[in-house]
Length: 160
Image (cartoon, rainbow, N blue to C red):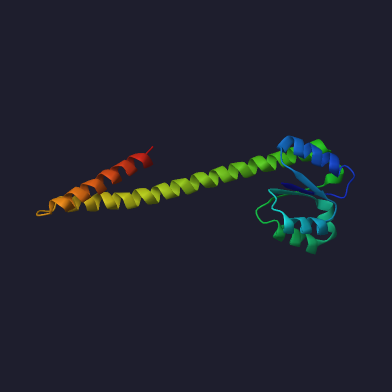
């Protein structure tokens, strides 16, 4: 859901265009105070606020930013912009967020893969060295062989 904070008459038109372009519900409020109340009740992906409102009350602006959580802030001078242009800024902010999430996911997967490969290498080396030891009971050799096969399958899956 997107929160639109604007005191202007075109706010509803703007909300309709944003909703049509993003396919996300848009909640419109006309003051920072009602925006803060909405942020207490709902989780928003994006908060679009008129920067003129923010300039009127710096304390309220700080409270708004603190209350947003993970929502993307988009501050615009909505008095000078047409709804189509505001919608374009919102779309760009959402695209940027998606790219950031994708990049963060890819980095997390790469780090996890690296950690798993490191642990797996230790497991493989330890198992192979233990298998080369003399006088191992056949049951231990059999169990280590199963562990080694599993580790090799996991390594093959990680390298894909």
